Structure formats: structure tokens, C-alpha cells
Image: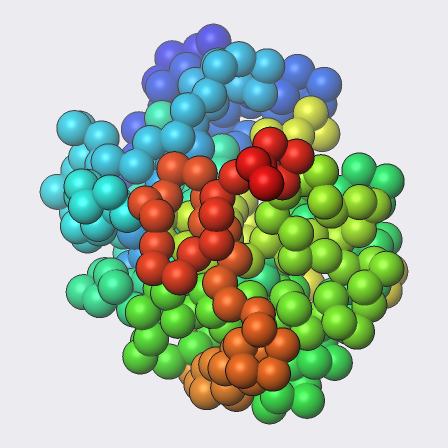
Length: 334
């Protein structure tokens, strides 16, 4: 698998062990290919991760081997990579890495990290999200085209509310839309805002969009996964390499591209050329910070006018005030 090499990443030497180890057998991409990919898109991945507590999705033996998520900073973390203490819903805490330079991304790639999962907060203020993340998740019987259609309706809704979203492929069949927000609200408020978005999309397209948490109730629709905004839930960062046999990546898009772009267009081989030609098409996201007042007002109206309160949290999340029964409908007792 070759001797270790050193890569110069922004003037910092990063050691890469076993550079010829194959990570994507179907395409022949190696560990070095992954590291060099992150160097090539460094400005983009760093924009997505900068100062964010970040969970590492590690595949030390490539996509055909075992993988795990590493939340706590590795013990051999270099002194030049900062950390942030984050608190889980259980009350426990961990120090997660917060990349501030591309070299930190390449250092993590040397550990077998393919995807980076940043929290929607910044170092120094880990309790106030600065992104509203909307996950459009195709259910069985639907696909990327359906997620793309739902994203178009979402763009219309956001525009009506005076908000703007930045879309990206998940790297698989889904789409993510990020709305930068002022870090003034708690996780529970941001989740309420996401639920308000999801319910309004469902009202406008009940045959194509669902907020049903339980899979048995969703049907062949796009599920707006509002729980991706719950504390300790993360979404793969833009430019992350995904554990897909074809080495697809999570690709930032401009809205005008959405109609024609498909996930297969963006992979370890094609994204560096796109980045060299266009740069980071989400580079201006950090220049904006929208408010959630309109969405939280929608949530209040849903409760007052339609009797719609909270929705279930993920199964490993502590029971929350006002949350409905967290039991699968087919197993619920009368």
C-alpha cells in the first residue's frame, strides 16, 4: 500500500499513511485520492466546516469495510486543531474537532474519514444554531426527481417568507437545503421552525410530501426529516465524500442548476474540475443571517388553529415536554 507521504496543505505538512490503500474498489480510488480531493476542494469544505464541532464518519478499510462515527476528538489530535465542548441530549458532553484550515480536513482523511458531519453551531456558541437544515428524504417508491420537485416547492415557500435556502445533493437520492440564520434561537426553536416548514409543504402537496415520523405512515412520498434539526443530529457537509460505491459527493448547487443536475454528476473525480471552474457556489452563504420569526409564527398558528403541537423526537432522545407518545402507531394501545 506504499510508504507514507507528506502532503503540503496550505503550508502545513500532513502525513498520509498507506496512501495507495484502495477505498473505492469499483472506481479504484485510493486513500491518497480522497486526501487530494479534499485539498482540491479545500476552500469549499472548509467553508462548510469552519469552527463547527464536527463528527467524523470513518471508513478505515474503505467503503466495503466496517465504519463508525467518531464524535470525540481523537487522542492524537494535533495542537493546531481546536475543539469545542458540545452537550448531548443525555446531558453528557464531548470535545469535537472544529476545523479552521484545510489541513485539518486532510488530517482527518488520513484516519479514514470520508464524510464530515458538522453541527449547525460555531465554536464558542454551541447552543445556538446558525443554520436551519431541511432534509428532503425520498421514501420507497420515490427518488431524486421527487426530492427535486419538493425542493422547488420549498424554494417558493422560503421566498414567500423572505428567506433563502442553499441546496445541495446528499450524495445519494435526497436533497438538503440550508438556510443561514442568526444564532439567537435554541435547538428546540429551530426544530419547531423546521416542523412548520414541513407541515406547510405537506399542506400544499399532501400526495407528495409527508411529515409522518413513523415509516409505516409515510407512503411513497418525500419525508421532510424535521428531526435532523434536533440536538446532536447532523447532516453530511457540502463536498463530503459519501460511502457510495461510485464515490459520489454531496454537491452544492445553484437553484438554476437543480432542474438538470443529478447526484451521479458529482463524484471524487468530477467535483475538483467543477470547483476549479466555478469555485464554491455556496460561498456567499455566510454573508446572510435570516430570522425565524415568520416560521415560529407559523408554528404558533398551527397549534392555535389546527391543534398541531409537537412531533416525536428520535428514539434515543430524552422525552421532551409536549411531545406526543413515542410509539409506533401499529403497536399503540387503544
